[in-house]
Length: 413
Image 1 (cartoon, rainbow, N blue to C red):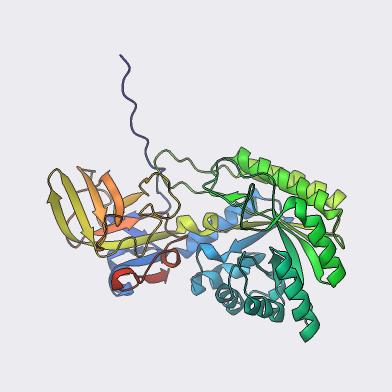
Image 2: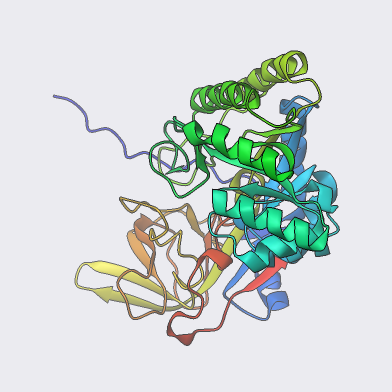
């Protein structure tokens, strides 16, 4: 008779230290951090962990490959300002994010602006600032030409390409098939001809196949295909490309059974691509554009238990924050089948797990669920619930105004 297999566990969340029973963020015990925040709920991001992730990538990747941060993952101004001097560029997806990038001190030459629905005003702001616009339609190209002609400001452009492949095993597929993002690969030569005719300053290609992959071999394959696509498209370009943005796709472990990405094979492949670029596209730089991989594991979300409630055979910990602050942890931000993020009782880190409990927020909807039937140490009113892997797509990716509860604080420590 076959023995039942044990349920898969979350990857160990060992990036934060523990002192006594309390989790430490930036060396500060959780109780003290909550007092500093003025109470719960709040997000906290650890500077040292951000720095360590950048160092890890710099060690694993060739020095010739640029490292860019996609601000959409976490646009907290203090965090962006902290990361900017350590990176080679920032990618923005709105005029609001553009302001954050410029205010963080990033030189305009190192900022790129992507997004399928850039307004006329946003295009004008981007050209006035002197940043690179990743164009995603013929409409954008023609409006940029008119803006340049009217003001005398040269528009810098790269073409965002919707490739004819996708990143396998990705959490979110951003390329391949019919997509609102970028220009279909087969239509790019015609767009490049229009860019040349209109006299825009062409600089390169942006090819983003997908995100949140934990398989190095899938990322390696997507990067190789992206590079080969850029080589083909470069033959139709009005001038030699200066930048090939290969996107990102690096994932972090969120759910039971997830394993951490092995970056070493990706770095080795990028060295091969970099050497090939030096021969076949002299003068072109390769870049990676990463979001969650840079910041996701450096952050936590903290809420406080306000009630412990038993309903028939199920125990609930009812907290002062939920999906209104952390939509992703509730399972309503891209999950098809809901799975638990790693969760802990932050002031009982050494206590053994007890009966399964469900952690819910204060909202009047059954969707407000942070942990479903998860074995946790016994907890009650006043205890802190910690959701790990919360440095990316947290506060700004959530419906904070829903039901009128206060927004969470954000701390960089």
